[in-house]
Length: 364
Ligand code: UD1
Image (tube, rainbow, N blue to C red):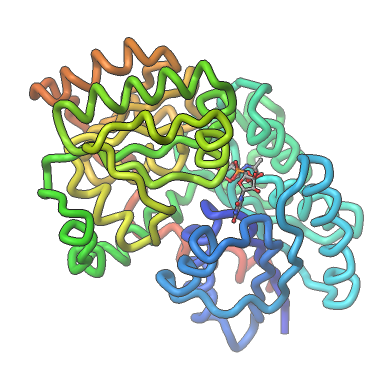
């Protein structure tokens, strides 16, 4: 029996591991697939609700690392994960995305000569100020099997000299989850709970340090949300980092009544909100992809994207962090100036099946 340990740490990991876990069931006579949760995200609303919504099993290992500086968080994951690897001796570990848990677990496995699988490899924002960019580059450098979601990933890895026989273009596991759970999302009650009319609201999520860590940027954000709120209802599920900072600068009370604040929202309800939004404003990576798949207008408040396919063929517009410009573009979209998009190649709900098939062959 071969053994693979997959790692989840933070919110954007859960919906990527769920379809992979399901796909490995087909090979359960030969491969044991275990899940390790590092505990980087630990709140009920940032973590547990996703295990429930995505029908993920109770993790086989929970490291409970919690928050801390980048070094603390990364180091704590490494110390705890090393113990698991030494005890369990897996044949491979599988990591997804670009969070601190991704690099921490990869680095630990590399030093123990355990093979590393990186799902969502090759994405590059070319912005080394983003902790995620550092995590992506380093994880890819020490991975043995690199699974890519879009063509730009293949080009980036080729430029970096990664041997092409390690790299596989398989599509997007995040879209696998979306395809699988859309029928459930269509049954969600979230619109009536939040008193929203479908197709007539703006959905906002912002948590990147460049948008939410200074008083200046948050002052601008409050004005921006209030301007949108004068036109449409605005739903703003707040990430803990953003909430903590708005509280710290005493800005929450400056938001007008059309801006509906909520705690982080579970996976199924959130997809329902995305699917039915008139426009989504975000700085998240995953939401750029989900809105592209759903054909929903997306305005990304970042200067770069590691997912260029969402701009090239999808509905995403990369606006930068100038909120005056963002306001102009949002109002134009609300006035009907929309960007047409189509579904990127291989975003068909079957990426995890391809990954499981390739890995089962490699494991022999
Ligand atoms: C992390 C990831 C980012 C991902 C994001 C999605 C890294 C470097 N960043 O950023 O790529 O897009 O998750 O959410 O790995 N907090 C809670 N409860 C939680 C989790 C966090 O209150 O369950 C608080 C922490 O105390 C901290 C803040 O939120 O103050 C930020 O959490 P952290 O995990 O450091 O990074 P994120 O900004 O969430």
